[in-house]
View 1: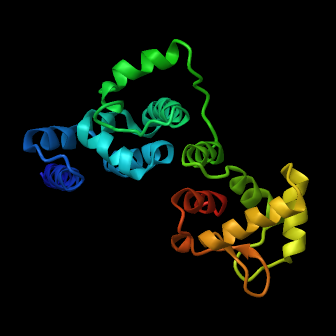
View 2: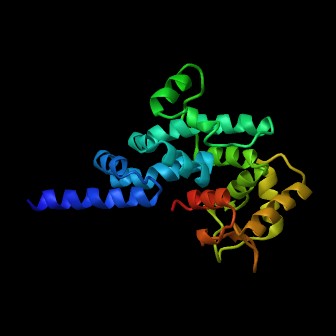
Length: 227
């Protein structure tokens, strides 16, 4: 009896969360709350946001709540396809209007066969996904390489109070990224301006992830720190 009450309470809570996310139709929110898990509510928006950005991910989930039913791995495949489509829009100079363009992919069932017919499907590493996102936004994806390789010394990252010199970071960046010293310095400056890198008393990755202003660099720092 207690187990049944607990399940009913969990469903009620999931429904409330879904409605807060923007799924306002009571019947849809209630039905979906029965079908998905607490983990789906947390992981699906986050995973989709890696590919499309949080704002587009939120709009897509409101337009098509069924996306929650496909879990983190399914939404990653869907997100990869959307990222490619959004990249096409960016190259053509067209904005991404969710209602006009992306709502054609109204269910996973309609999207996945297109992907299986010819699009790449291997799981991309998180940093590769974020690089794609930066490129779509017109930012330099080499920022991620600079962050990932510039601060790796002796088998670990320079984080927080464990610092190194600017010159050593630039040298490390240039060992892994095909850039001039000036370009490496510019990448390092951009990382510092975003809050991903600390510069007081030496250079290191900022361990306080929420202080990183750029959302993609914030996700990159979180990934590198295994948070």
